[in-house]
View 1 (cartoon, helix red, strand yellow):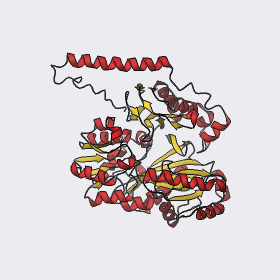
View 2: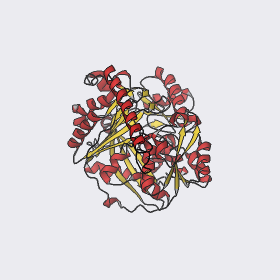
View 3: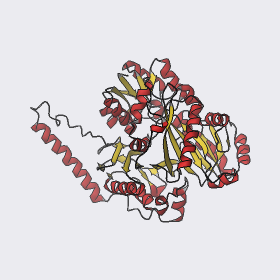
View 4: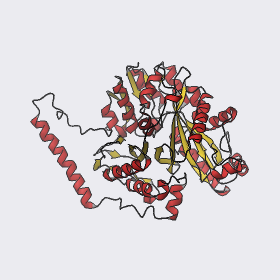
Length: 511
């Protein structure tokens, strides 16, 4: 087993990985940019190394600096988390060349499946049905020709990454040029790669993904599905498992297709095979109404992995580490089961009433919900700054219950208890989504948020997000009172070297 792991990421996922490491008795190394020097993940690690200024290109996307940090700190392995360099085959190869272990799949698998264009070509060869589209396009004329053949609307998307980055919907040809330019710019910033592909946009699609997991000895299973259709700007905001859409038969079919897709590239470690289901396209292909199509594969841990953990009782991060160290994954497919229902809401510092634009500022008050069946994965606490440099994800709120109805009710209660002052958040928007009859009935497609915002009162059900002046003053005074109280406790306990109040950092973990 590894003795020391460098976590090449930030925020809640860095803390999540470090927690798994600590439970396995492994020391952790945090890396941080100038913007993150006082962040929770830096305080939580055993060691911390500065890797550059606040720009992602100069810090979390700088392969050379990350590997140098791992070598200088005598780490055995690097865990990339998600985003940044987690799906960068060149980085995985550089880690291996430095005689370090990359905690994830092989560079070859990342190259074949992490690259959206290559993965589609690989799936076609393997006989897995894919969304109509075209890869390897270069000029604008190439895109125009492909779009005309596929038929509008089309989706222009980054070839080297996911998460909704570098993705644009194009409804007609005169929108194509601007979409290509902006998608390339965003893809280059997010993944260091400006290549794009194009595919048919399916406005009524459901987004369903299957978690796959394999070891380095050829054993590969799936850990069931996650329903991810509630999205804004092509990025998921609510996920749940099991999917209310799937029948037992369809679950078996899609699970087998997911394993087939992963096995085609010799995949191991954690990965996610993503599918879409569209009733209209299914009927055109003479399907039975239950046809599904391979969309892409994420060759990394997913943001929404906690709901799979809660329904399978498996710690995916610990197993990532263990199989990377050469262990066998001990469970056969028939031994794996789900129990209960889990939902995750991504809590963002953003303004739903203003196009979900990010909100920045100091967290004057930050109180996470607590209780049975409630889990919070977070990288922030009161007093932290939310900057414009990175994704505005504050926390992941996850609930687990015996059935879907109870899980929805538990999530609604937990959202009511989640208090954030200082930035605008999507908490009230989440409440509106969960209260909507379409969500209750499982009738939510990937365009549902956009369409519902246009057609009904989804936003009007939200209470005013901007905190009143009295609330801000109260939060600031509460923050000052806590600091003063901690100072009193420290003074009172100066003679006690074992006092937990000896060093009042204010640090706490939302778990």
